[in-house]
Amino acid sequence: MWSQSEIKLSARPRGIHLVTSEILAALGGLDGFSVGLCQLFIRHTSASLTLGENASPEVRDDTLSWLDAAVPESFPWTHTLEGADDMPAHIKSIITGPSLLLPISGGALALGTWQGIYLCEHRDHGGPRSLVATLSGES
Image (cartoon, rainbow, N blue to C red; front, side, top):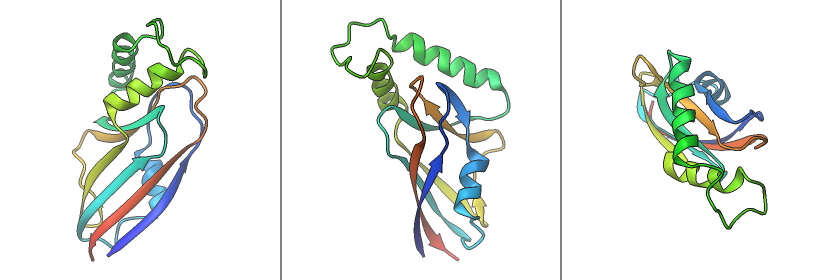
């Protein structure tokens, strides 16, 4: 069985945002799948998706701090037409990636106890974000 849908995420400020429950709600449940895969793809080049620890907000803060230190806005970028945060956002999205491939087991994502899906918003005003969710598996 295959299905594909678009998920719209509302605009968020720059940061690492836990979106697991929002994605699951948009998918309408996975109870039709006993085993399968959920592939999530973000349709943007200045935001990304990642899987990370979902218990402590300090992990998100530290991740954002590291990304900002590793890819500074003060670097002499040549692509500056869309603002100082644009090119660093592209590099950060390359580092963290545009997609996740997650297992489905027993009608649920088979995430670890402390794992959550994160939208990494790399722009100050990135706007709404669009994901494509592709599900495949057996009922």
